Image 1 (cartoon, helix red, strand yellow):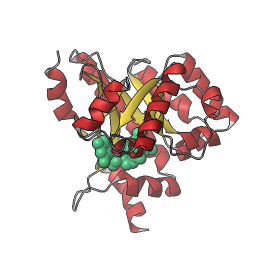
Image 2: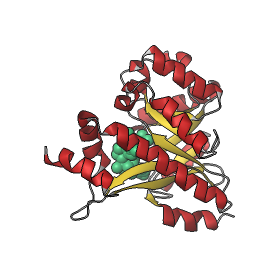
Image 3: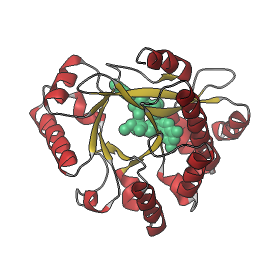
Image 4: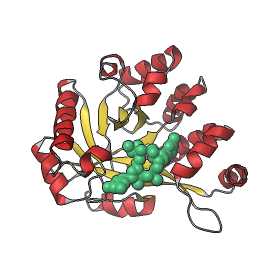
Length: 254
Ligand code: G
Ligand code: G
Ligand code: MN
Ligand code: NA
């Protein structure tokens, strides 16, 4: 495949970048966290979406090098932001199931944090339900260790996986990110609204932080505030943006 041959070259040529999308407190609007989202801008031509190239990288095995690059880049950036006095926000990176097939993936994540002098308040991870369901005992042990060290572990796209709620009892996680498909129509569709409300309730009863993603309008926001959702991520507040733009944003909050 042409693109998959280009991927490795792109990594060597520095064509990847992380963009960051803020998550704000539903109550105060203050920026609390940033989700790191990988971007590929080829030297020539339009940017290519991760929805397109992550599956290719998974098939070719490059996902491991790419994943290592993501964590290193997120650590480097966080160190820079901390040095500038921006202490509030955590950066969360996405980790796919394929990445966890490499037995030392999570140990390598912890090594990166340590090497950069970072701790649990600095970098967290997002995993989908399916990744948790399919995780073998070694991965679960690693996740439990991360969890006990206070690392933030969010379930991404919550509510869309092939899982039962019972897995919430078993897996070491600290947050739910409710999938944006539920938020989309919740202000007008009673069933979506009920699912949102229920998910937030369950999350809170389990002691988890609850994030709503894909918030695009004021109606969704005010509904989520009424439901006491903790954090809001979506175009209504901020789109994913390069680190330089985040710099200016965070500067405004100091
Ligand atoms: O930001 P965007 O909507 O383009 O992301 C599309 C998909 O790519 C999302 O499912 C997101 O989780 C995934 N993605 C973005 N960045 C990364 C990354 O660094 N690693 C992995 N594994 N997935 C990512
Ligand atoms: O699967 P994951 O949640 O990691 O994917 C995050 C993706 O969601 C990113 O590609 C980001 O661009 C996208 N996203 C973030 N906020 C919004 C939003 O308000 N509306 C839409 N349509 N997409 C969003
Ligand atoms: Mn995510
Ligand atoms: Na998501």
